[in-house]
Length: 185
Image 1 (cartoon, rainbow, N blue to C red):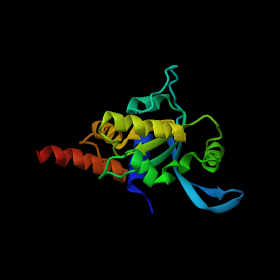
Image 2: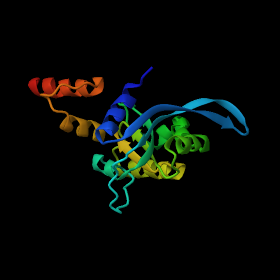
Image 3: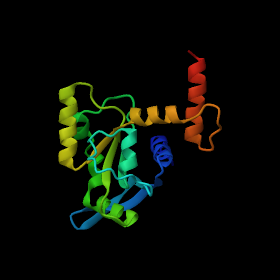
Image 4: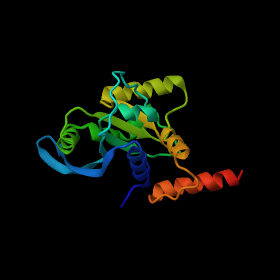
């Protein structure tokens, strides 16, 4: 079954010029034994990357994706809550996409060992100190970047033209939200 949050992120990346694969399966190991299957939500390649020599910030904006050539994403669309350090403790599987098995699968899929690991979150805690604690925990866990869903939605809402039909269900839904969201005001 398709995850709607992953479809929104996929549409965003495709609009930014990426080739995208979703749900890339890999075997999880506990010690030397296989203990099950998991997946990388998104593995993507940007063939038109614009290298400018600037270091990317930890919290990404839409424009930063023009500088990324290879990426792996974990998507957590918990839209009714803010993500904090305590959320990480309650959901340690958030870090599965940066486990050694996941990284190896990303390398095989991308045919490149240089990629960024982006965690897409619904919203991060609003207090500056709780944000900093969360970001520090994520950095220590191996996440290289964070992207908030609001950044994706703002980009798509601006880029989707209300007067042009979309062949993608996600993009068409955003087009309709643009049309009827404005008329409902």
